[in-house]
Length: 135
Ligand SMILES: Nc1nc2c([nH]c(=O)n2[C@H]2C[C@H](O)[C@@H](COP(=O)(O)OP(=O)(O)OP(=O)(O)O)O2)c(=O)[nH]1
Image (cartoon, rainbow, N blue to C red):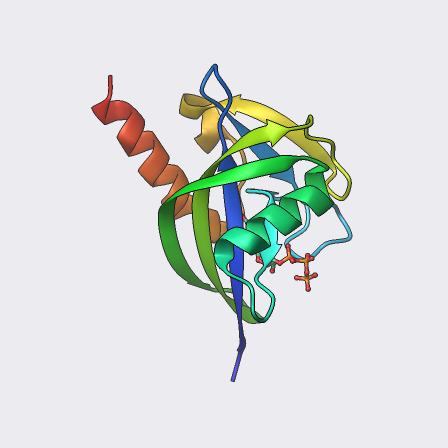
């Protein structure tokens, strides 16, 4: 049976409504694909605690975790990823790529121009749909 992992991803929006996108490094699994910064939920952690910890490790900044956006179960070749995405805002520090190949602030409408980790697509679709509704 395939291993299942619970993963959290942060949808960090700035005042211009640009979203912080992170490029996985060539030496990571799912290399050279864009993702929401975050990572695996450890035992005895709430998703919110994991996100704060992962963002501190990966981006060297502090976030406040807001509403849940989407829960997706995606089956990859080797593992099943249960991805929870949350709206987050930065309360301290400036994001720095401690582990990713690149960080990029991308306007909502341009998110689908990047090549994303497949599990992230439903979150992107939901963000784009919400943006359409508010226009
Ligand atoms: N952090 C993050 N991971 C994602 C996203 N979408 C997605 O499919 N994943 C996958 C990639 C990894 O398999 C897993 C997240 O674990 P991680 O970020 O701790 O992965 P990792 O590269 O450090 O660990 P590993 O898979 O090499 O063991 O979930 C996303 O938006 N953010």
